[in-house]
Amino acid sequence: MTRLLGIDLGDRRIGLAIAEDGPARPLATIRRGATASDDTAAIDALVRAHAIEELVVGLPLDMAGGEGPQAAATRAWAAAVAPALGLPMALRDERLSSHVAETRVGPMPRGRSGGPPTAAQRERHRARVDREAAAVILQDELDARVAGARGEAVAR
Image (cartoon, rainbow, N blue to C red; front, side, top):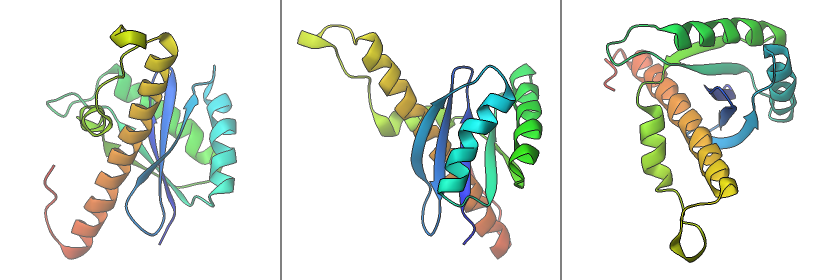
């Protein structure tokens, strides 16, 4: 099986997931760099460590399926990063992936004595959700490929 890296691109963080010989699983969350080149350098280390052969980048479509400014920015980022890594890239509709990820991860933990969560707790929780969203995106792509190979329609 081809080793795939799922990418959930955010403004501050990038959630990453991997699929090797089974279902997609969360891998890591990295901070966004100032440029796509900075992001490429950070992702390249994981690509090499895990012998990744293809990228699957979540495309943030609106609920009607249209593309807005965030989708355009994601396309531009992906167009810069994939060639720099020397890997093929697929774009996958990521509508509701964060919602599914939040459901899987569960609620944000409370702070000490049941109070509001600390900044560190919020950051850890968001990073975990980003990794999980990348796994959702990647698993959607894997499921679509299997269904396509069988000649089936893919339901979302």
